[in-house]
Length: 325
Image (cartoon, rainbow, N blue to C red):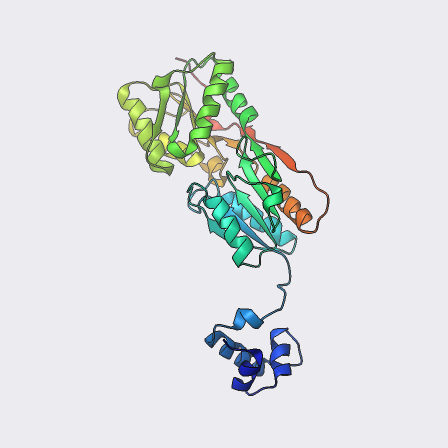
């Protein structure tokens, strides 16, 4: 194992100079510092001796995946919120694997120098279990009571969407999505039971594929079975895009034949033709709340333990009801 004195000897400098280089002292010129650092890296000892604190907080973020446009915009808003506060972030994807959020928290807390950790998604833990402060961004029912968390509540917005259909005389409302949106399907069933007194299984199509392909395939199953509802709620906007394309390919018009509402309110939704109605999950508000919460926790400042962000329905062209059936 290399010591600082051995490293100094290899770099042909004094131990004091080597120590000053690793502490960021301006007394060591750039050429000498680079030579010392290069030798330290060759011997795998750079991190052992380097003790300059990064100028600003670094927050580890655990996200289910990078591919989905459900999480990408939220990540972007978290990065923006951190940058506004002079902080940086490092990101890892859990891949929807059971227990992976917990494993990645352990990795960040034990093997990196992050100051705090934000976990997006279901996380089984308790504040008292954490050496490094942690905040969770989750859906309703996905976060244990013992955790500081920001909760995204979409129920009222879903109620508004279904009420919109009911008030416009729609008799049949379906749900189109893929298997990773199971919680949204349960919420859809509950809301339909409240407003319509129930739902019809023949108007439900949940497929294996994801994103646009999943929406296309799920809608195709309804079309080919002859069970096309007058309106559909889609698990997220990418699914809605695929579903709309499928309807067009089979000669059905949106919204004249089938009205469509998505989830997430992605940036491109309002630019589609027709523009897509969607449930806005308020990424910016979620990110700001989570970042403020984690920074307050890092500095042991008082903060609320649970913040609920209410989603809102954005009605656009895709859900205009021009005729009834």
